[in-house]
Structure formats: C-alpha cells, structure tokens
Length: 113
Figure 1 (cartoon, one colour):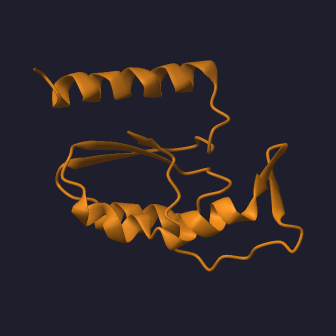
Figure 2 (spheres, helix red, strand yellow; figure 1 turned 120 degrees about the vertical axis):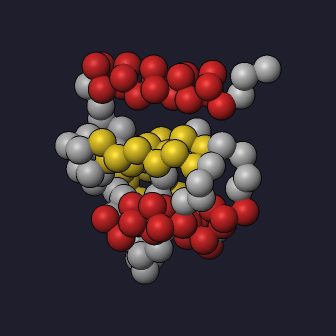
C-alpha cells in the first residue's frame, strides 16, 4: 500500500539549514536525501507482491514527472490509481474514507486466504 509516494526523480535541492518545513512540520533533509537515493520508481520492477498505489493530481509535493515515473515503472501486479483534485495528504473526510475503503478492498481481494 503506497499512498501518494514520491519517487524523487527530480533533482534534489536541500536547504543549508539541515531542515525543510512542509505543512508545519520540520523534516531533516537527510530524510529527503535517503528518499531520493532509494530510486523508488526504478525499483518497482523488483516488487512482485500486489501493490495499491494512490497518486493525486494536486499533490503539492509530488511533481507530475514523479507521478509519471511511478506509472511508467509500475508492473502488472501494481494497481495505480490517480485521484483528480486530491492533495498530498490534506484530504477531506470523504476523500480519506473512500481511499481507505478502496485500500481495504484491494487488500481483501489480493490476499484472500
């Protein structure tokens, strides 16, 4: 399950302060450096488990290029869904409930015992 993943295919610009503020939260730049170095989009081919990936068109942190990198590298066992008008994480109650319901359905249908 990956909600609004950012594979960080863009060039990374790290502030000199050692911290980046996003949505009122201070994040150490080492987090972004590690995320960038992980090459998430390129490694999707190695994930054989079913995946449900949620992307949002109005994501203020994940660029269209990053969304396209996920879409391009997704495998047949990866279900990528893009939600028009949704932000990175500032979802309405109804939007969050819908994504949670879809996620649960995916898990139930993918991992029936």
